[in-house]
Structure formats: structure tokens, C-alpha cells
Amino acid sequence: MAMADLFHEDVPFCFIDRVMQTIRQTTQHRYQILTKRAARMAEYFAQAAIPENAWLGVTVEATSEKPRIESLRLLNSSIRFLSCEPLVDDLGELDLTNIDWIIVGGESGSQARPMKPEWVRSIQKQTEAQGAAFFFKQWGTWGEDGVKRSKKANGKLLDGKLIQAMPVCIQADRKIISQNG
Image (cartoon, rainbow, N blue to C red):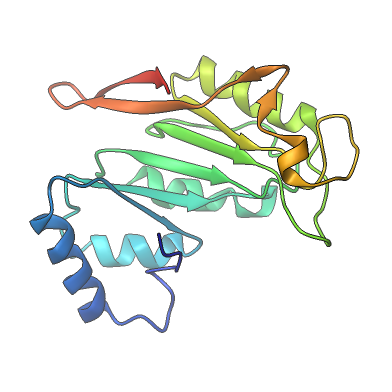
């Protein structure tokens, strides 16, 4: 698996066209396209169709990045998702209209900033109330108890439970159901 931001300013739209063509030709695969450049992604898809097997997402790690959600919300993707990883701020109230899946995780590494459990629980509660799937990926370098150690030692349990729901899209009426997996 390779990680890069397809919608980086240095990536020409003609290259993105070729990527989308490959996605359309490989319908047996599901592609999760994540960007911090929500406006550029919206600009591209204003002139290009979104492949059915492409899930589109934006990174929202802090309150200052919440405007990315609005750009994503307007795209006609089969699945729209937020990656709140690394979550470094309390996101407060979220409008998750037309958002299907939220992934939350802490930061890793020697310079990692702590993620507070109440931030995660707030997102989880809002996600469930608004009908999206919630996926807790990991605590990162700082554990649920506020202790700094390896991300493996801190694990991926939230309140003692593994919570890793995935969205399942039923295309007939665009109803999203959550599937724990």
C-alpha cells in the first residue's frame, strides 16, 4: 500500500485522469482516496465523474480543518469518509450530513501529541447519532490512560472494546448501514 496525496498541487489533472481510468477498469477493487486538499479534489471532480469503486475522504485532525468536510459533503461519491488521524484537537460539534464513515486515531512517534479520550468519545457519539460508521484505529504513542509508550502497547481498544465499523452502501436509496468488522 502506498500513501501519497493524489490531489497535491504538483500532481497534474492529466495524471489524476489516468489514475481514475485505472480505478474504473479495476472494479474488483475498492479504492480509498484520502486528501488534505479537499478544495482541489472538489475542483477535479467538478469536471470528472467519480468512479463507483472510489471512496473519497478528507483528513480532519483539528478544528481548523473542519471546512474540508463541506467540500467532501458536496461530492457524489459512493462513500464519503473523514480521517480524524492524528486527532490532535477537540473537533467539537460535527455536521456529518452525507458523511458515511469516520476513522479516528492518535499520533505516533517521538514527537506525538496526546489524543484525549473525551475527544474520541465525542466523535463516536456524534457518529452514531448521525448514522455513520465509526472506526477506531489506534491510540498511537499516548494511551487512553495518558501514558506515553509504544503504539502497539497502547493498542486499539476504546473503553475496552474493539470498534472498527465499516460502511456498507446500498445503492438503491443511498442508505448506509454500519458493519462491524
